[in-house]
Length: 158
Image (cartoon, rainbow, N blue to C red):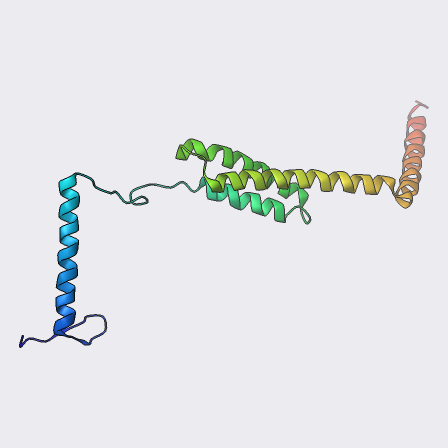
């Protein structure tokens, strides 16, 4: 009892009661370990030793970015949606199970692709039905037609 012990983390002196409590806790842990060994049941840690694939996470990231890029850059959005879909579908082959992240990546990728197609169709329709665009398009078309028509008649003289 003459020897003083100090806690290595706090630097405070460890009292006799705390030392007895520590010893009691250690004995309980040792007893539980012995009981598990006797019963033959050993619990393995769930995540320890398992190798996780990064493909489901990549699928989810590509899918989210595909949705974000729909308005500002539809071609990149469509490509990222296809990548998210492919990576999400290939991920279970690596993990032997369908992960929630790969499902989210597949869904986000499909949403990104569908929204891209919808945005492009709406844009083409809006441009095609605009009266100013139609007038300008007809004017340019007629000019180009007249130019090509004149070019072909110049070569007919030979």
